[in-house]
Amino acid sequence: MEESTFHVDTDKGFDLSAALQLKPNAPSDERIPYHTLSFDFQGNGLSGGTTSYGNYYEEVENIRCIVTYVRENLNRKVLCICGHSKGAAVVLLYASKCNDVPLIVSLSARYDHTETPSNRFSPEQLEKLQKKGSFVWLKKGNIEYIIREDDLKKRNSLDMSVVESIDKQKVKALTIHGSKDEVIPVNEAYTYDKLIGPEPYHKLVIVQDANHCFDNINHQKIMTEAITSWLDENKSWAFNEI
Image 1 (spheres, helix red, strand yellow):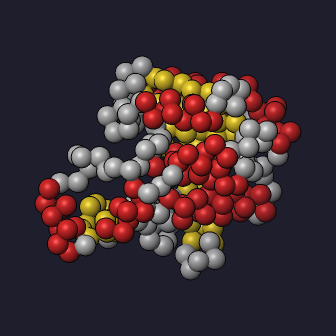
Image 2 (cartoon, rainbow, N blue to C red):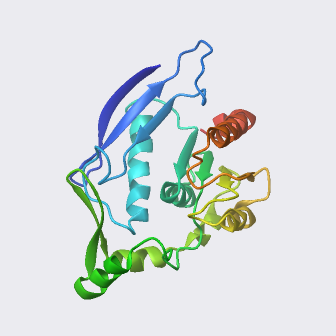
């Protein structure tokens, strides 16, 4: 497998770090037999800029920058976008706003953002938020993930019902969720199915006993097989759209 890394200018004063993985033409053991590109959202990993708890639509713009770069600079077509957890919600928001990538894969996406999970922050952190207006939630190297009151308000007001505006003539979606997701209840997946479905516009796959991150190797196999088979089923239709 050939891999190349590069940076994408966002025109906002920072770059996004990305890696393109080219699959060999010969049969291989790779789980997803397609060329893939992964990237870090702003303020994460090797990407520049800053991140925040409620910056979903800023990350939608990150995806737009990457998609445009792939098309205009790499001269490649974008068949599918896949995201997990917050990234899955961002991918769905992108689809509802742009309707220009035919296949969307959502893994463990949250629908209802009106409340913050009770176990997400400690009592001490919430006390700091109340007294000081912010607190450091996570720290990775030199990067601090700061939670601010405005960020929580922005996240809690996020309206995911906009997925209803996904154009069924241009976009199909696959939702995969673990039945024992301890972070985002599995019923959120059924909500998306009601809003985006029915098939063939939206397919719902519930992986029995899988948790939020699909940590079990067997659950990972089920997940990747579901993605691969769905891509294979829809790629002919999708190529006509791109």
